[in-house]
Image 1 (cartoon, rainbow, N blue to C red):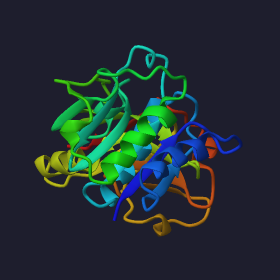
Image 2 (tube, rainbow, N blue to C red):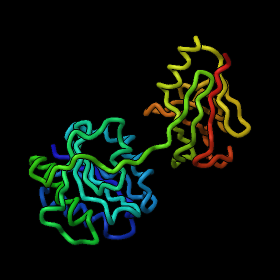
Image 3 (cartoon, helix red, strand yellow):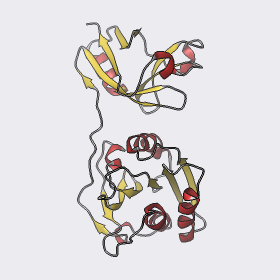
Image 4 (cartoon, helix red, strand yellow):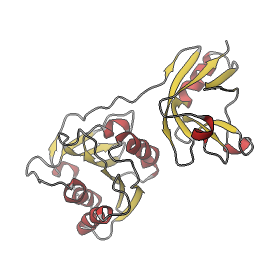
Length: 260
């Protein structure tokens, strides 16, 4: 079964999404195309990486992921295919691939250097056909010229000591829930070091003394703090827009203080 996922900032009111899908299907009409989202803010590589990193592992190994999100550096960026964690990613090398995983790619190919295609619509004219070929069984090494590395973005990371984890809000989702860069593995490691000591989650004027296991451990209108399926600390209001009700924004700080 050939699967291509598609993520872009093209929106849904124009022909762009359909045109890219058509370029994939011209290679193989049997390919299954799965839309991840086309509502990314224009050029928001961070948001695109967040969504793709959250979902790509749910697809079968060998899935091809087509990325139609470009930032201001994309004019200089190469058009590449990246092999990472058993998946293939097609797009421009403007930094997004470095945000998808802690692992480095196993292989990278420049797909538009030997016979360059001059185009203002790379997703349709370059990425779509390449994604279609890959999903149909084309050999990775035949698609272009090998590259040694990719452009790197350095994600904002939480800082952890024995006494405190200091992180930031990195994303506000559709429901108004606030996703942070504080990871479950760091929290649990420090909790073990501190012999399961009490702790307080601090943000703005709120002080929360427990991590919930599900949203429904609190009542409607109450605040929850839990680790999501990706292991990231998330804050929200049950049946409410957490960002608005708590007065929190992207980049605001969140602390976990361990009472040792």
